[in-house]
Image: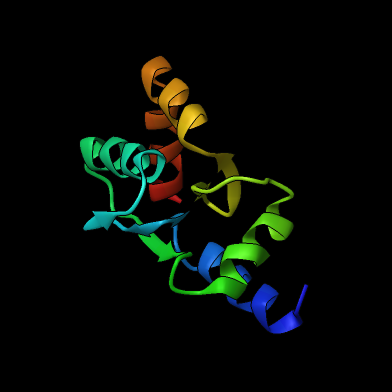
Length: 107
């Protein structure tokens, strides 16, 4: 991976408690999976940042290599890859996501 792309991704992941790499942005998700993630985080009422992979090809390809995770969206909480839409839905339904978010925002 290009070191500049890695540095850019590192910066986004490390400087945002909740970071979502997605198609579109939180105001206008461009796919159903990205929309699911935005809806879950919005329901929790927590602040989060997004990076639109459709606007930056290097990030779109780089994030997959960075995380060793082939799909988008990708959600990071406190610098840790949580997963994509399906995992977010499971964690939300179990109540585990709320706990992870509270811990991240308190730190």
